[in-house]
Structure formats: C-alpha cells, structure tokens
Length: 318
Image (cartoon, rainbow, N blue to C red):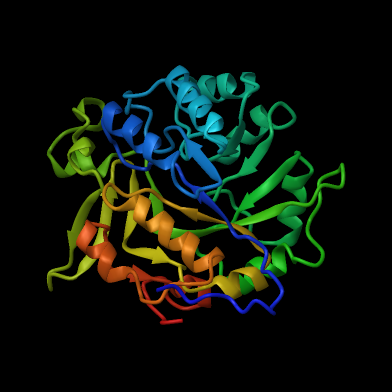
C-alpha cells in the first residue's frame, strides 16, 4: 500500500517524467510496440530518435515523425533527438532536416547541432553538452533553449547552483530555463568513432553487421573477479550500474529540478515509469521496487553516487 500524503501539507509541485531516447539497437517492430506502451504511461515527455549511431537504420526521420504524432495525440510532449557524435556530412544533413520540421522541439546531442537548430525549432540542451556553470547555461539560453538536461555527473546541489530555482537562467525573451536531471538508466561514459561492439565480435565498424542488435540492453563486461564493469553499446561506453534517483523526490525539488529523465530498458520499463510516478508524485511507495524490477528483467545493479558528490557507482539508501 502506498504511503499517502498528509492532507494538511501543501501540495508539492509535480515532477514531470521524461522518457529518454532508446539508446540501444532495437528492431523496428520492438520500437513501435515500445512507444505504444509508453503512450499509456504517466510520462509527460518522450524523446525519440537515434542518438548513438547513424548505421542503425531501422527508423528514418519520417518514421520518427509518425511515432511523434501518435505520442502527441496521446497527450505527450514530443522531442526529437540529434546524434551525440557527429561524424559526417550525412549526420549534419539529418540535423538540418530536423531543424526544417516544425512539429517538435529538438534536443541537441552535440554542440555541433546548436548552430543549425538555434532559432529554428524549440531547443533542448542535451546531457552531453559541456554545461557546468551558470555562465555557460546563460550562453546557451541566448540561443533560445528553454530546457537543460544536466550532465549525468553533476550533483543535485551543483544543478541548483547553476540554475537556482529562485533565480533561474532566462532566455532573451525572459522565459526561465527548466532543469531536467538524469533519473534512471545507465550513464554514458564515453563516445568514440570506433565501434567497440563490432570490435568485440571481430568486425570493423564499416562492416559491423549491426551486431549491437543482439544486445537489447548493451553488451555487459565484467572484471577478472566477475564484477560488473562496463557496458558496450556500439560507439557508446556506459556504466554497468544503473543510475536511480527514485528515492530523491525532496532533494530533486530542492535543487529546482522540474523533470526527471528515465532511460528505456528492454524489460519492465513501464513498471519503472509507474513506480517513479508513485514515488515522486503520488505520495510514495510502501516498499523498495528494486526487487520487483529485478524479477521483470530490469538491469542492475543500481547507483546514485553522482547525485551526492560521491563516486558514480556508489549506492546511498535514501
């Protein structure tokens, strides 16, 4: 049974939930079924598109726009995402096409996208941009951005210093920048022009045969002592631990966080969204949901160290 809020207490502001882009290489049918399920969840915003590798060609921009229209019809705010690593003229042309469409905001996955997107579409600042100070956020606000997804390694109190809830950074038109924090999912540690998944299988990136499609939650690596170490996701290297801020509602609100990003996983994700909604906006959960998640196939182990200025792999009960 959920812990119900005190009726005499002032209502807490809703923490919006954002479903981040699918970071792994899933088949087209799997992606379409996933977004049909997401449309029925409590998520407020859904970020769609390919952010990792241009060689993943299951979905084209027209397909993503069609998915976006269906999600919008279901009452979701929709944001397109650009790639986190821009390597070719074709990558730049795709961003240009994203800037030309007028239906959805676009999240800049890389600084090279900013000049193309600024002033043409509503702009979201993605978590891989180098924004680590109030001054840097001011510079990006001048481009017309209205939402900042904080870097995954920033502590909650650092987010509050960069974009204070009582004095937020504002656009030239006076609109406040809102802060979004990474709330659930493996953390991006690095991007590379090389594909380490292909290399693991003895292939080159140019002839990768899309081997990453065999690992719907990435390819997990262990240390010699059989401890979780890293996860390979094509050109992206991720943490083995899953960042999890489900118990941080008070700290998130104190830091001025307006929305929390939940990064998709292959199994049990709709339950993850439901549990975050209950924990953050419906009075709390009566029990730690991690055991239930494990039974559903949600990857682990979990961590929240970065939120507390600790090593990222640490887990601090809250």
